[in-house]
Amino acid sequence: MQIEEMVRAVQEKLGVGVDGRAGPQTWGAIYKRIVDRGSPLDSALNDPEDRANQRSEKVISTLHPRVQPYARALYFKARGHGLTINIIGGQRSYEEQDLLYAQGRTRPGNVVTNARGGYSNHNFGIAFDVGLFERNAYLGESPMYKAVGTLGEELGLEWGGSWRTIVDQPHFQLRPEWAISLTERQMLAELRARVAADIDAFS
Image (cartoon, rainbow, N blue to C red):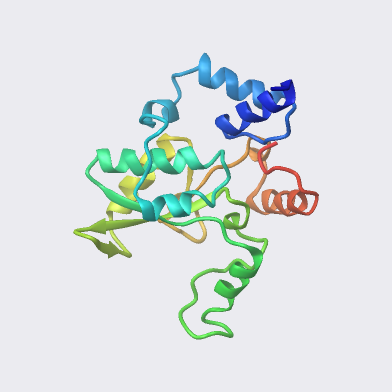
């Protein structure tokens, strides 16, 4: 196996951008995996082979590889606290987002989003939605979402329930390191530019 192939295999396993070149992102991920094992994510993860239920895994598979372990960690951490959640919303295409945006406007139904295609973090695989369940019944509203939100924030996720404007309690997202100091609008503009240039969201 050539070096580039080995690096690509390592990158895929670590869930970082796969380009076959071992840059700062790859070495940082290797360091965190091998040396710095004290992060909240590490303590929340079960065996790497553990998987959520089939319904949740189908959605998790649509997320960016960097986000997938966070979604699984929240799934198991919530259940460890007696909260039954499923991952019910993942990545959406611009077209899917536009259809959702049209709902309650030019299409039947209630308004479910204020974001058009390209203006939602779901369009870039960095965001996911959870649903709370009790005896297999979906809870659209529940004070327990706040408990799940706290667990997600402990993992390093942003929680939509903490937003000051439009509160979205089922929503979680992982902000790339390059976007830490950016506003939401600035981050979304950069993510759209990265999609147009075929640049990984976390590189």
